[in-house]
Each structure stands twice: as structure tokens, then as C-alpha cells.
Image (cartoon, rainbow, N blue to C red; front, side, top):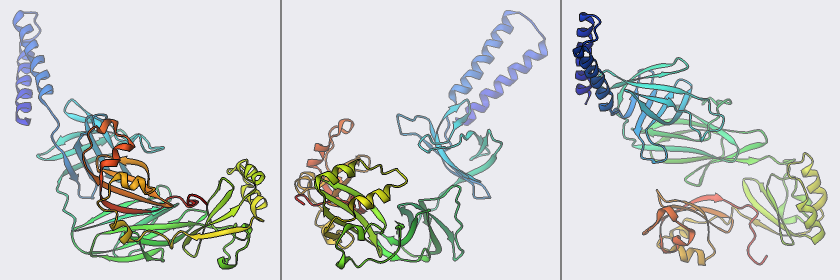
Length: 411
């Protein structure tokens, strides 16, 4: 394909030089030659199709990936760039013999435009130029297959950073990271750090949902796959410890970190955290207080003061330890093989799905899960919740507490 393009361009150049040597003329022969030149040039452009895809890298570890789009809503080529301070990627189009367009993702809020032109260079490389003046020369790069992978995410408000070896990671407050992916060819040592946002505090690291460490900076020799999550909690108005066995009124709890306050019929539910555990407390609330509660403005500066004044005297009927009741692996294993209908009949709820991966976002009680299911999906374009009934659970992943103010039916 490239040889045809070069040959066409060469022929066009020969014709142009020949015409230049003859001087200006309106003869039919010159008119015919001009038409042939235009036709050859047009043909060379029409024949060219961008084919250089995969990973491209330079000596400074700047990385570009190019893939042909399989998304009918976003045709063209996906160009992803991790170079200098730029980390961006989106779909752009072929223009002539180049790819050209803005790779700032429209899904990213406040993303600055980053318009690039990508052209072929050398036998297998590319040149990427931006309108802002950046120029990168990269060659084809085969991404090594990862022996181990580490994903890092957060729960609630904060940021993460990591560094190879035992070096202390550096946080970027201007562009904070909440997620990371590391692929390793062999066992290596990495250091991970977590930093809470203002009003929050670091609580713990988990690995595959299990408690891993209460230190905000951890150094790990990665010898197997890991799914680390930095868990942050909300700071309370005071950090005093409350003896939950002796609590009588709601006011005794209102200084603890709040994870939600809700009114359900005649019940007030206050969700809170203490010592890394999550709870909710329930109190009976008279009708007039319930109406006043719904009139509170949760965005008002004095919301907490109004809430305290309104509900402090309510007698606490029950405190539930949500963390203590989190689902066990045995519970999740027992779900394998159940149908969607069986789940719905047992009180499960569905909040969405990803049919590409056959993942369904479901909850039961206060807890959230991702269910990977299998079965025949006859009409993906018009998929409805009732279509889950005939699917079968293949895999279950616990995602954490999804409703801190959950009350059992009948309470």
C-alpha cells in the first residue's frame, strides 16, 4: 500500500517537471497531461489508509497508542497520548496521509483542547505534532505481557500516588490521581501512598476487599495480582469516642463522621463511622419533626446546627453495625448459578448493566455487588430489566456498602 503511494507520487512529480520544462501552453496535450497529474494525485490520496496501530514509544518513555475505532458512534482512530504533562486520548479522523484532531476527551470535565497531527515516520514509526508546539518522534513498541497487575482506586474523597522501589511517592495536587494501573513483567517493589481531601481522613488500604493496612504509605513487593483501594472517611465535628452500648439519644452520635441522614416514614436514620466501622442508628420521629426534617436545606452553612437542634432528643431504638454484617465469601459463592429471577424474588435490586462484559450492578440490603452473568441476550439494543430474569450468575464481586441509611422492610 505504501509502495503504491510512493510510486503514484513519483509519477505525478515526473509529469509536473516535464510540463515545467515545456513552458506555458494551452495545447490539448498540456490539458490532458494536467488532468492526468490531478487524477494521479487524487488516486494516491484515495488509496492511502492509515495502518500504523499499536503502541509507539520514544527514548524518554513518552507513549502513544493508536487503535482503529470499533465504536459506530465514534468512527476513526483512537489516539491516546502519555507524554510530558499530557495524558489524554480520543477519536480523530484521517486527513490526507495523516490523523488529525483534538484528542481531549469530551467526557473529562474542564479538559483543555489538545489538537494533534500524526504522520508516518521511518519504517514503523510515527511523528506526533501538537498545535501547542510539542513534537514527538516515536517508534513501534511491543507492550510486554504483564506477569502481575496492580490496580489502585479510592473510596470517597482523596488521592493516590505511587513510586517504584522504596521512594516516597509525590502527589500532584493540580491533577490528583484517583486510579492507577501497573503491569509488571516480574516481581517488583512499589510504594503506594494515600492522601485525604480536606474534611476527610485516611482509614485503611484494602486488597480485593480485605483489610490490608492502616498506614497511609505502604511498600509492597508485588508477587501476585493486587486490587488496592485507599479508603477515606469523613471527619466528624469532634473526634471523641462514643460508647455505643450506652447511647440513649441521637444527639450523642451527631458529632461522629456522617455518612447520610434519612427519614423513612416515621423513622430517622443516621449513618456514621467510628474506629473504621460503619453503623446506622434508628430513632422514632414524630410526624411534625419529619415534616421539619424535609424542609432542612442540606446545603445551608448551618445545616448541622439545625439538624442537631431538631433531632438531638430523639431516643435511639437500634444501632446496626453495617461493617460487621458485610457479606462473606461463602455468601457470594452460594449465588453462583442462581438466575436473575431468583435474585429479584429474594429482594435484590438492579441499578444498571454493561452488556459488553455482561456485568450487572446489583444490591441487596445496604450492600452493592457487580454480578457477571451469562445467557442469551436476544435484543441488546432494547434490553430491559426483566431480561435479566433468565440470565445466570457466573461471578460475584462485592463493591462495598451502597446504602448507609438502609432499613429492613417493616422497620
